[in-house]
View 1: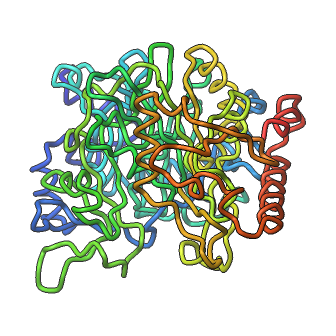
View 2 (view 1 turned 180 degrees about the horizontal axis):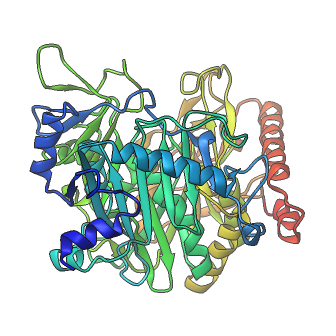
Length: 536
């Protein structure tokens, strides 16, 4: 059987021969550009990017993520009203898979991309994506690791297949489907079905969800983090943080080399990036503030839901008329990255939060137990203007700094983190990039200047911060640094910076109550979770 016939056989229920479908498999970038233009699926901007739109959905639909329920996974997958996982019957999944396959069969041309998730060859997944839009094929070409010619010829059966039929709505008749949008996972059959959404990020995060399901079974910790390393590779840092905390800005360091910007795994030999590319926010992008992302946007890049200046093909990054979630997808080779994207074990792990309440110290050194606690909570704060309906600062929690993608209870990932911290002696830091001298919106309060945060991160990289003076905070019992050369004490020490000490204490108590309420939601009755609260 020749290679093409093998491809046809392995597509899985896509009746290419019967329907006379043209298969475009692992096409090069220029071919996908050409076909995108031919099919009216995008246009080329002046910098060489392919500009596309994703239809109604301009972001992920986490409430429409559904997992097939199997009895033998009852204790492994986290099922609760507070978890990101919604149950789906096997029958409903098969209905949706049939809808997707019928949709794909109705097209004259379908695009197939075979690639790898994970740079470590012993732990990577072979992923096949089947779609109808050239833009989706180019996106996955950027975001997965491209096989060499010989690897593609011997690719064989994929570990997971993604059926992207996002232009086709889901069947809402089954009782376990509440929306015409559905992102469906069958971990036993190793299939993902996308219906009712053309947003490319669902494919990227779908594979990340798969890694969160598979890796803990191998004692590998899947991480929603960025990673960089010193030029010689001797110093490795992981950065965790929700939107607005500065994760992208601080990990994109011109004096260090990128391992990856979003998804990693920590295994016995070190850290490896899951992805072959980057998917960066580009709203208000400026060369002066984000040079790495700016320079990466060129030929081979996909820009999603952007607008150009009238009468030109020059991108207006300030235009949010389609969405604030404008995105750029590009190969990691467009950045200053180490390839293969792997590193040794991390020396430092940095948890970033933007504390709008102004009571979390600017930089604290965490114990292993405290690291588990803050990892489970994944804290930051939303401020007015960033989330609809928010008029006052609001505590925001996302388990493991990425609860939309986890499949197990957060304790599973936290216990793996503790094991690796104990074994490899990595230091864990909590850095507040948020407000100092008071809470957001109060007189005299201001956001911590970026120059001071960069100084702190640089000291951590050079292993020079531990010699500085520390003390312990009230309520949270954090060992924090209250004196660092070159940084004012009121920047580092909220107990000193607040003029109204009673208000400081009451705000501290208020925030701790929010942490306690979040921990109650996560409590599954296990001894592990019962003891977690004491480590705050």
